[in-house]
Length: 331
Image 1 (spheres, rainbow, N blue to C red):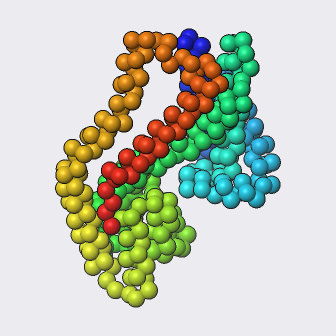
Image 2: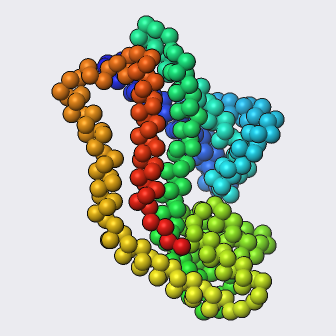
Image 3: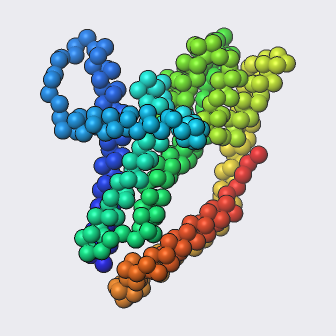
């Protein structure tokens, strides 16, 4: 049991260190660009340990990226990470860098399980290596899935306010570029970042419907897709942009009201589904307290490892199905 706790702690610590290096590396680039163009910047040759560590990791990522770019399959696979590259760091980061990070995390997890097994006095099994490799490789995907979910919810929550601000700007005679700029300044969070990106794209000469279409692909929201369709029709057939945005505003308001009503009606069913998802953990916790060694064969034997992997897989499938059943879609 102590070995299992050590393994868990080491894995968590290493994951934190790797993600810190990735985030610290990006913030370091931004600080260097700010210092470069700052009038009051003072030359400082001192380099901290984390600066050195981040720079070395950056070099490792760059070398691996250069190798991985030769693969046509990985090039296509890396395209899905393009939406996470912002215009602040697009000169220093490419989509393939995210794939390189995935490989390094994968290697790190394999080294962790190897180290943990050596402490136990054994060597890692094939299952250990496979599970560690899969967990390490898909860790960034899990992070970005969670990030996309949170970002999408925040954008959908603030989208109505953004449309109201744009509609008011159009009514007062402002241009499209000015309306988008007002939204980026008035609002905060992911919606403001997206409208800043849209403002930049319009300054490059893209039309409003194309900008919203690119926004829709990044966010993957039905509400944004509806706005994109409306603006596309407006661009092809012509019409009054104020009337179009007024109809979009009414639609978003009605949809928000309907969502709130449905949420109140399904609140009890959602609570039951959450209780059902938590119950297995409560059951395992009670048995562990009563008999601490009851589940140890799952961690100490190869057959137990396979069964544990299948249990986690089945539970994940069960949670996914329950989530899909309880999810209410608004078309």
